Length: 384
Image (cartoon, rainbow, N blue to C red; front, top):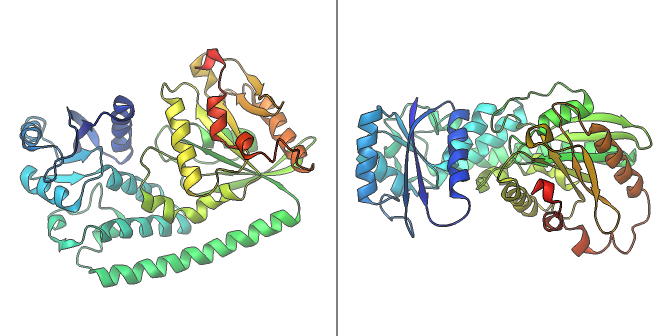
């Protein structure tokens, strides 16, 4: 499917990196980006989001490049999407729908599929302003996988009933996770969760640490389902390590809400390994985006260790850094080559041992332990 990417610069954030990410998202959904339309505005146009002049430019590009789908790097209102589809004569997908579609592609487990369907239905329900007329000529494809193909004639009441049933299922799965966590707590097993921006290398790190066979691919959201493995570390004993879904800019709120049961593994973890792509030029922005989601799900007070991965691509050496209180707060590794993994294991062991000790006054100071402080303390010039 040949796609046209549309990105408007409103003067906020890293516009170029955001647009590059849209291309990766489109490829992950199975589209082939063949052209990009950009522009600058102070605010979105109420009718078409981009204004009539830019719409004419998009129409010309559609004819020139034989475009099948227009993908906007912004959330569109139902009216804007409907107006654009009528004017352009092709399907229009916004960033939220695109991410939901990728999740629908990646979900493999029962829990993952339930969570994705719930998020999709909640998103679709907001677009029932005048029924499904603006979707009738689309027969599936990007933005309409999963429930979108089977719910075209469904009204709000039926969607509401389905949403209630899905939420009930997720609550049951959440209770099962609670039972597993209580059993883990009774055995005093130290738990570690991997978090980070999508494609930062979490699953590769997880496999290298635990010798697991988790699916790894150079694509966004390769991992949706939380996978846990038991790891034995000398001087720390058994440790449970969990790999979780990656985060991304402007992660749809429906997804965060639907995946709360999965993401709660991070809330109840004893330690978060925040995996960072050390080779990414926008790594600091990605760190902040991850911390925003962690705050939204209530995991911002969980102890966090920054793991700068892919040092082989960034030209860095394995290293371990401590903060002003002598605690490890950053480790430099390459999950691909194995460099620095011994330092990471020793760091996990040190956190595990300290978790058994009474908390010191410094550890009780929320200003010291807040994950966001790790960002401001990054003074190592070689990595900036």
